[in-house]
Image 1 (cartoon, helix red, strand yellow):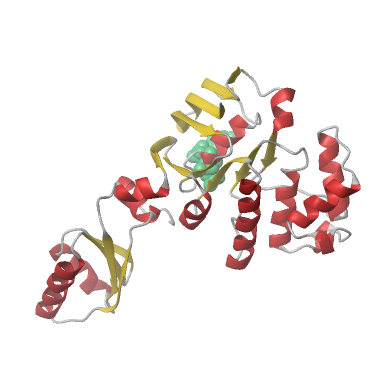
Image 2 (cartoon, rainbow, N blue to C red):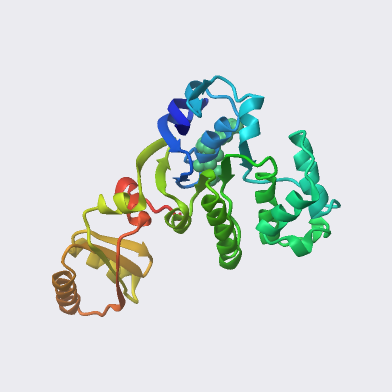
Length: 306
Ligand SMILES: Nc1ncnc2c1ncn2[C@@H]1O[C@H](COP(=O)(O)OP(=O)(O)OP(=O)(O)O)[C@@H](O)[C@H]1O
């Protein structure tokens, strides 16, 4: 049984095709990431599935049942973390969890409450007021609100946006724990590392469309490139000059470039020879495997991180 099936989903805002005829499914127990830049249509998609926005057209199935609107029955089985959650500053963590449980007509007993706050490592903060929490702690509290009703499917809209690397890793560990518990998770992100680390399957979205999907491995394999050579040049003009000379070279930032290749040795030799002839130097040469960023660049000609 599929947890979710989406067929030909559309949502336009005037001329903006926020979601433009997308189809996908999510298996039970699977973690699927909707990966794409700002404005790709990720939030619109997920909020339609949560019942927070109306679709223009298309079909949605939950647990193999076609649903025309997201009814109570479904809402009991899904957990929702919005991109931004507003909390009451003067409530404590514990009171906030109780409040959210109340929205589901549920009362959380002491044990469940303890389990929830400990899952997101807020045990010591249970009696602290929301206004005294850090950004990372608030984000973890927002995660709890998606879990209070013990859902089978969890929607996470950009669960780590704005967090520092350490706080981000913390949230990733929690999501991995939920995955181990067998939860089905659909998350949105514009961080390729997040999709690479958490997702069983990635749906790459751009301009309202799913432009590629598969496991990270499948997506990266589709590039047909073994390696990327990256290097820096201490002069932005020279890097542009070099790009004209070398096929397949991409400028990453002003002074950094990447070159896709299936033959590292030969490509490095060609590169070094050319650079020598042109009379300058390259530094910081690294060789790495292709990643989702390269896939996005290959498909759209743009960088995901921009
Ligand atoms: N309520 C709305 N009214 C008009 N346009 C909207 C509305 N909501 C979203 N859009 C537009 O639809 C497009 C998709 O937006 P959406 O928020 O779904 O993208 P996203 O991929 O989630 O991006 P982000 O990461 O910034 O949230 C954008 O062009 C956005 O401006």
